[in-house]
Length: 189
Image 1: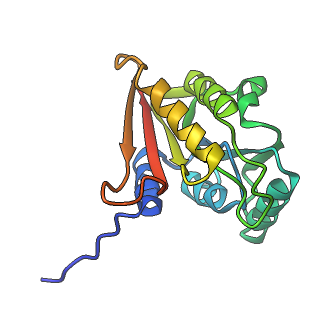
Image 2 (image 1 turned 180 degrees about the vertical axis):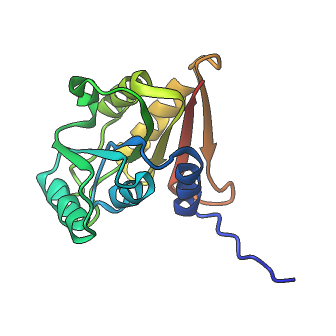
């Protein structure tokens, strides 16, 4: 009998949630494309019959993501150089999963970050376009000032959401720093 190596980090956890939720042909959103790695993973998961839609306020992020997708011969995507709290302006529906990787763009200006107001507005908009049992997957980074504010605000708001409409869970290490990244998973009921 061989021992399996379990990895409890948030990236494998997030990928497990995606794999368990998303099927070939689905429509998904990467609300914060960053350098495009999550967008690429989502595009591979939905396959050529699916669609991945990405948002970012930084042109650098959009260009980086576009280049990465093109390098992997991915054509089933749309990228929008706009805030994720403008999701409702695209008239989308039947979205299976929306992923957020909050904070700032790695190796870029750390003063440009996601903000709790626009993030929360985007998540509320996202709930309206999710299919039943669809998922919103949020990676939170409380280790910097605006990330900490985002963490506090989101947790306060989500605790008030009715269980009849959503299930909200967190995944984080209890014996890790309070500033360590963690994941929030919201499933639409």
